[in-house]
Length: 118
Image (cartoon, rainbow, N blue to C red; front, side, top):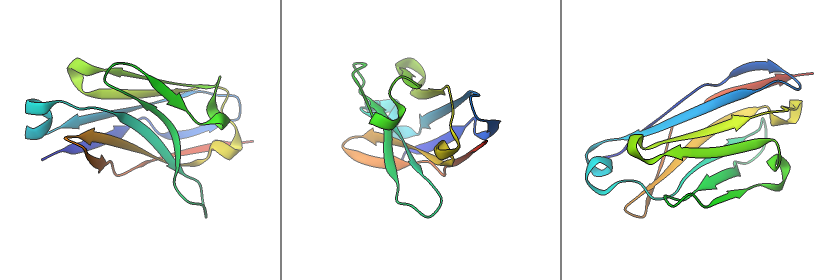
């Protein structure tokens, strides 16, 4: 089994910063580890969209709308992924979800709310 838990959401004014964390745990994670980890978001009234992903080897991919503002990183020893969000904009307001690939199966966290006020 795989459990995914996010933390670090909250409310911030435009231009501010937040750091999200997500940890994967469970028997499958302990035995087989985690491959790609990533962050997605779902703005109000919109579909879920990719924010950033990172492979176990550290290769990253970002959505164009966060390039230069957000940084994804991970700690493989802790099976944890981070999303440092700087220069936040009101349009970044969304529920942010962590996604974990373990044994080619995808697991989602419960989501954490990020609200950016103007």
